[in-house]
Each structure stands twice: as C-alpha cells, then as structure tokens.
Image (cartoon, rainbow, N blue to C red; front, side, top):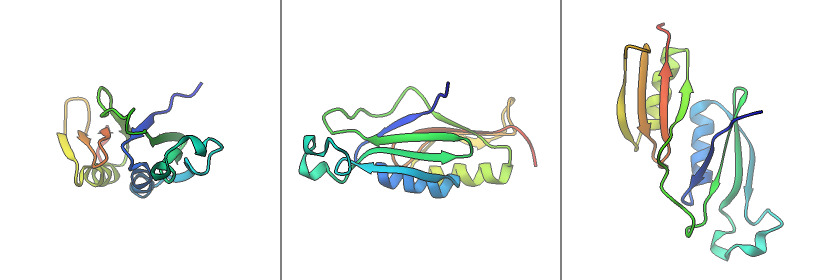
Length: 136
C-alpha cells in the first residue's frame, strides 16, 4: 500500500507542479490536461488546458494533483504536506522557496523535537510542514 497526497488547485496546478519540480528537485512524470483525456468533451472550452492529473516524483514518493473545476473547488485546510529533510541547508532553502509569496505560519527555527521546523502556506494555497531533525 502507498499513501500519497493528492492536491486540488484553483486553476494553477501546472504552475504549482513546475515550481515544486524545481524547488524539490523532483521530476514531473504526468501532466495531463482535460483536453488530453478521453472525457475532454465533458469540460468547458476555457477549462480544456487545465490539469486533469499531474504526478511529481520526489525521491521514492509521489505528489499528485489536479485543477478542481470552479464549482467543486474548496480552499485547502486541515492538513499539511510534510517534508522531512535531513540536510539543514536544503531544508532552509526549501522552506524559504515555498514561503516566497506565501504565508509563514510558524517560522523555520529550532524546536524541542527538531533542529529546525516550520510551517507555511505557499503561493498556491497549499500548507507545508518542513522538518529537519539533524544539525549539520
């Protein structure tokens, strides 16, 4: 069994996944638009270039997502995508990259359980928790 996050976006999935690919050092393996799918005729013309399904591989994990049609989109809340990074410099870089044009909920700093930990909501509305348990 695998447990993978599936994120829903408000029309900006492609931009988000391209940013995550660069920021996290992953590889996009799927980026299917509504137009590419056999169900294309079910969407509206202005929605045909939106993402029906995206998959990003980071290490041995998958991050998946899609654009949610406007009538079904709901703001993301109630969870965070957690990244455990054992390299302090990489953890710091990733935290600040994800936080750019987003909102820091908890600064990236030392806690009683981690060398560094922080929480944020990125520019795409996705909540993240970045954890670095080991010092350099």
